[in-house]
Image 1 (cartoon, rainbow, N blue to C red):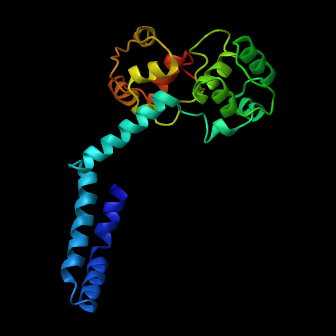
Image 2: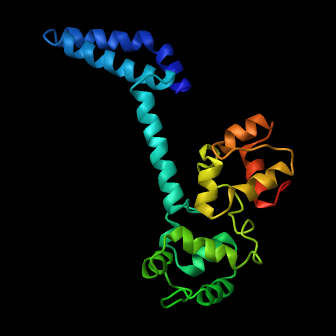
Image 3: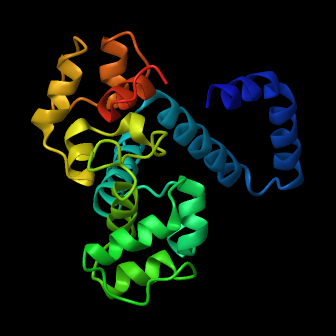
Length: 217
């Protein structure tokens, strides 16, 4: 937004010259042109400064994203649910044979082979792709649920509240808070990763790695 505003400032004269020229060409339409310009500037400035109703729209958008991530999870890469087990396991660095064996141990139904699509497994078992993904991660984490977390924070983690994060991955907030407290970090369920990182003079990724038990990596 800042770059766009700076671009607008630098090109203010050419833009106004263009608008004036167009107004002269369409002498009968000065009000619509000026109205369009005023609305554009209002929306742009309102978004930049966090004014209503743009602020509410932005918040609604973030709330929808957070709800979607909490309910359905964040895939480790784009359209991961459409990948075969072989491709998916290769990307997340899990042995596919180990993953398939673990899914069968967990009574996951279906024809589980290297070529089975992750989304098909989820549908047949009444699960979300995220739930299947977590089972695959657990197959390689030696029973450590935190070790089953993705190696890197999923997209949008910085804006996620710790409480929502715990709900998504099935952790108790108390255990997550205990891990952070061991590093001298006091956390509340409504703290986001970014706000907690700022208070602790750290990055959101460092907070994530502490929770995962892989700090310093």
